[in-house]
Image 1 (cartoon, helix red, strand yellow):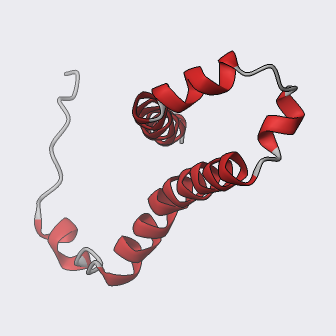
Image 2 (cartoon, rainbow, N blue to C red; image 1 turned 180 degrees about the vertical axis):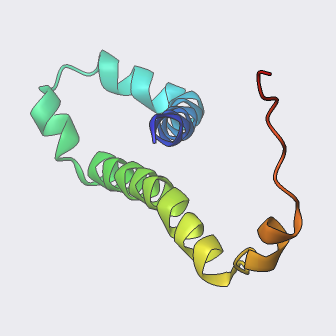
Length: 95
């Protein structure tokens, strides 16, 4: 479980940093304006980008459990007879 959470976190961080890198010019322009942060976040263009980023992150977070569930549903179960075919290993006894 911990590895799965780390994997999801690194995926979200990668998407976030890719988005910030692509929007760096816009972020610098927003920083240089003298408007309050709440006013900037409620501006239509910025609000659309924030919602788009959140939706993409939620989609990434849900992709891992959904694909795991699909693999469990569609992958064939291991055959029971294969485990019984191998003879048990003998353990050395003290004589």
